[in-house]
Image (cartoon, rainbow, N blue to C red; front, side):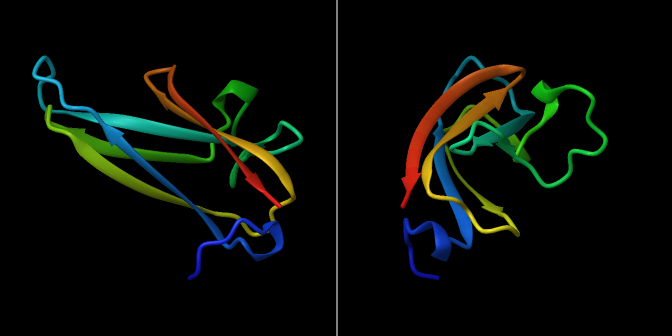
Length: 107
């Protein structure tokens, strides 16, 4: 699969991020949540029929085991309908707190 930023050709979104090293943390499972906001402000999500509150809508959830060492994480999001042109925002959440935000555009 060739990387592209053309909305009509995008098949999946790839997210790379680093969880920083910390000697203060014991080994534990952490749940990472990614919310992808489309250009019209809606959250891209696959299954929202069980949710009752819009803040519970997410695009991806992944559990990682964090042991205090630096971790490089790669996650993918696939969507059936075609992506639309415009500016998207990806939010990275942990324990109900936003820990990162990145904007990207599809043309």
